[in-house]
Length: 192
Picture 1 (cartoon, rainbow, N blue to C red):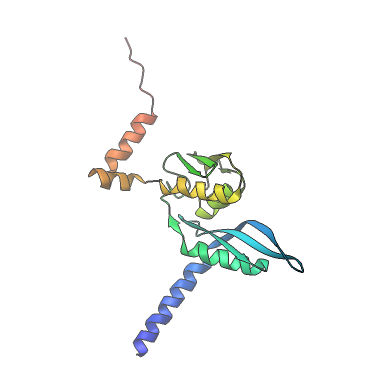
Picture 2 (cartoon, rainbow, N blue to C red):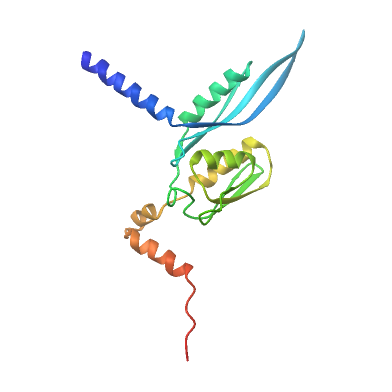
């Protein structure tokens, strides 16, 4: 019995430790009014993005009568829905990607060191909490923050690392990465 309680305590400590590393960003708050007999009743909807800046990120949506309660609900949902995204050199994406949700479309490109996060609004919040330092991103179509965040997540879900590709194909990682360098380097002109 005592051992079981110790295990529960250890598990709680690990969860608290993990939660302490998580960065939370408020993306959008929406005030909604419901017309009732005595006038209008206001409530708030919050969109939050959380991440550990090491390749895990999630988003959540919460609604409540007060702003802090809406933020708390959104944060809890975001922590439950976190996904892992493979990063190259812990700073950028492995390859270009595009995502779509509703009328919101996003495009993301891997960038060389020193580029920074070139992205706007909701996309920037997602990419920064993910831990990406160099990326070029563009949103086209709807600028609705909910659609933009979801489209960004769709683009991030299809990211794959050379290790994942190599295991799918039954090859070595060196074979996959070796091709990347040979394709990137232009062929030397033939001398006569």
